[in-house]
Length: 163
Image (cartoon, rainbow, N blue to C red; front, side):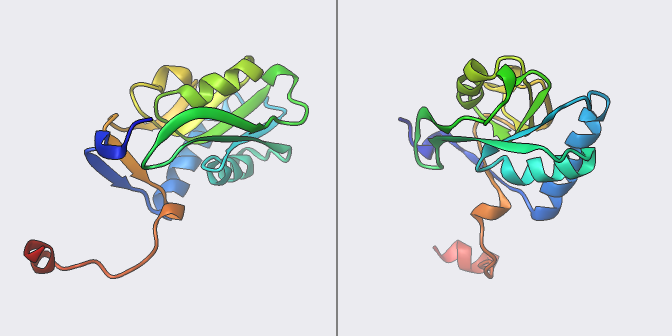
């Protein structure tokens, strides 16, 4: 396990930005739109998968439930639930919010080798693991998704300088 000190930068993503980028992902996937359904990678892939499903008019949605890391720790990938009937992934679209190191996708790919893997954000270490993505961010960046943040007043510049 490593600690979050490897993340020098932060990248907060708003709901609007996530929606816009998820729609851009759907546009990119439209020409391949022969998918039987979507498998959302929980938990981060749930929101992008819902947006992509709406935009591509896909009604069949399943999940692959995974536990792998949080902001403080990276650990081994633990598959908590496989998708119901995904035929090794043939003609299925796997959607996640982010590929970081690629370890989560590698673990899922063992079960679903024939699926098409798409993420909204990709980091260099995991980029080769996905078939389609929209935005690349540096490896040393922690992405704060809208569900990770709460609205509160920001300190002023002078308040920050006093700390």
